[in-house]
Amino acid sequence: MTPLLELAHVSKSFSGLRAVQDVSFSVAPGEIVALIGPNGAGKTTCFNVIAGVYRADAGEVRLAGTRIDGWRPDQVCRAGVARTFQLVKPFAGLTVMENVVVGALNTSPGVREAERRAAEVVEQLGLGAKRHQPAASLTLPERKRLEVARALATGPRILLLDEVMAGLRPTEMDNMVALFRDLNARLGLAILLIEHVMRAVMALSRHIVVLHHGEVIAAGSPEEVTRNPAVLDCYLGEEAV
Amino acid sequence: MKIGLTEGLPRRGPALLAALLVLLLLAPLVANDYLITVLVLILYFAYVGQAWNIMMGFAGQLSLGHALYVGLGAYTSAALYVHFGISPWLGLLAAMAIAAAAGAVIGFLAFRFGVAGVYFAILTIAFAEFARIGFDHWRWLGGSGGFFLPVANYTRNDLLSLRGSPTMFYYLALAMTAGAFVLCHALLRSGVGYRWQAIRESPEAAQALGIDIFRYRMYAVVLSAAMTSLGGVLFAFYYNNLFPEQVFHISRSIELILGPIIGGIGTLFGPIIGAFLLTALAETLGEAMRAFGIDIPGVKQVFYGFCLLLVVMFLPEGVWPPLARRLGLERRLPAGPGRAGAEP
Image (cartoon, rainbow over all chains, first blue to last red; front, top):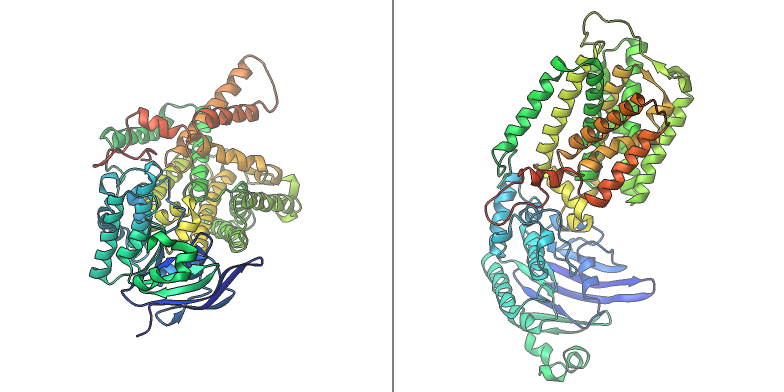
């Protein structure tokens, strides 16, 4: 089966600094894959290459077999890849609903339709009570949820989540995990997530890719990865065993 | 959950709007010539302010050279009328096309090559200056000596050629302002409006949500330029004389954006309230100074600066949002408090 998203030998440098070096991995349709690694390992750079923010120096990015490297971010989104930002970027002056409507306009033919779809997503993410508040008034965990809601409203085939669990309380995180599991099971939505919260990573993903200094040092099932000495050494630490 | 013109607003919102419109419609019955002249000026600023607001208030692109589009509209329609006898109603189509094309060129250069923020603003000034210097030397259009439309004492209003009394121009300006208001309201709640506001708030996030930011910024600059040029047509046929040094001058560009800034950028009533406040206050000041026999050149500009200073310091959102809250004209929508922006 053709992978939904595939990175093949992707490299990206920033004026001499190799942020990502010969990275290859793939996400099958309906799969949830986690991208983990210490700070500065190149995880967000990978996201930005996939999402079209950066152009890879070498290698290819393919979506369902079609090369998307070199496309603009909006083209990548319209092709079915939605992403959240690690540093959230809400449309601060717009209400929660309006924020999500902007996302929903990606696939909805008209404003009415987009508003209907946005209302659903806002409820799903538990933001219903705040839907007419300006995004600027939200707390950080709420902004993270808004970030997810907006991305989800674009109707993606694959969702790229950049540290959406950071700063959430355990119950909030469990709700978020349950939501992603539901979306994954019900709609077959594939997810690629960058995450430091291992509890969420273990609960969600069946496949983990570990980056260190821009290179893939391990990949496999959660059990394999958490037993890998190199991963323990550079990232998880002994106590994770 | 589309927010209509009146939805979520208290009943008195539309009632006040209707009352204002009736008042403006009846104004010429009681107003003297001087007051009509002032009102035409107010409506002109409200209209071009609204057009500028599409670019800055909706799409977040600061233009400091909108006098360019006013001037292109004015000169195009006036030249077609004077040289070829073409009715301004046809001339305005040419005017809008030329202004839109100029906007498209500036927009293309800026948005394609990543000229943003302050640098974009400087680019818009530069093009207005090019035009000013160019028209200064264009003999066919009178050059720096000015371009004049034939003036006579009209016994009746000739709407087809836009020759007539200030009252005719007053109603014309009122129709334009009302039309721009309705158009902007519809735009703000359309898919285009949503995308513009997203780009204004965060271009990166907007692009990540599938918005072609180049294309939508182009729409904003082209529409804003075309609308502004219509203001130029009114300007030309109302004042009957055009001087490049005045029409294209940067002070004209600044004057035109003061209304929306003082009234409230990005709001629908901001440009209208701002134009009313500024022009009315400036005229009152001028009259008072004449009455006391004081003559200080440039006092109007100092006054504008003072108003701007006050608003920036004490009402950074502009006059309209807090005023709307005070008047109880905020939207009250179910679930949670209404929008803080109070934008009816």
